[in-house]
Length: 321
Ligand code: ATP
Image 1 (cartoon, protein in one colour):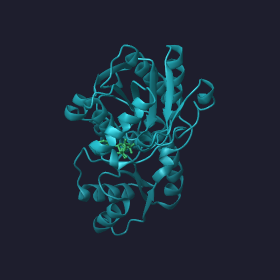
Image 2 (cartoon, rainbow, N blue to C red):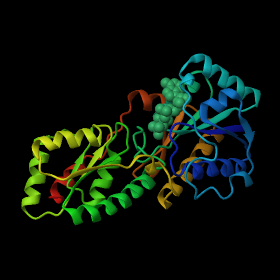
Image 3 (cartoon, rainbow, N blue to C red):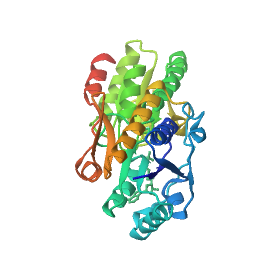
Image 4 (cartoon, protein in one colour):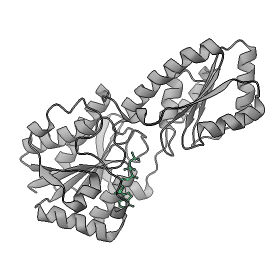
């Protein structure tokens, strides 16, 4: 294998640039010619492909977003799109591909793998919802951004004896809510992976107010319901509460990656190159207990399941009252 390519796909995540940089630089170091594909699978099918030099990835390690741009391109779920993609790769003489993205992007990598094209998946999403890894690129930065926002909300919540519902991202995963709930001392964390009783939450808020608590912060994972819906439900149990809803939205995706995300992305990128150098495709990289690993990507997606650390949920019950 002499010529390889890299693309980013799905939602952007801080640290994707650090991964691209590592793939390009380590690729060149190992003797590969490295190509960049713009706009994910859309750019692949369109042939928006160019050779990248070491200089092309200079000055990006600390930047959020992705210098290769990203796109949602549902057509890639069809065989026709996938075959067109492989045709383009062959046209450019590319023999291996690194896909940086979330689970949807991994589905594309699986499709290419099943059609016989050596592909390596690198987990890049703020949601931390990909099986086969403890952490994904972007998660650490996103939770730090959320922490900062909730800390600010706490100031105003305390001043006005308010209840704040903070809706955070995560798609169907509760990791962002769990980590930021613990990190900000939120009274309640509501995630899709654990049941909850609204009446108990309503009672706890009232009880806290009676006991002189100045504010209540509820961190709600978007996969459960919207903040507005939760407010409406809670009002039935606690009509007196002055409840405000904050939806943090896309600010959670942006910003300079943390040191942890930059290092994780660099390690993942370098591992992807090591694998392609050994002619190993059809895999995805990950981190388990601090060690960089890889797994079969088809098996990971078909049989793996991401589960957040539910010990954190229990911990929050024990320390936030
Ligand atoms: P995030 O969860 O962070 O938004 P993601 O990678 O899961 O990232 P998606 O929009 O789900 O984001 O997927 C990104 C792209 O991957 C899609 O636009 C499409 O091009 C491709 N893709 C998604 N599902 C499939 C599939 N079943 N088969 C082939 N390609 C797919």
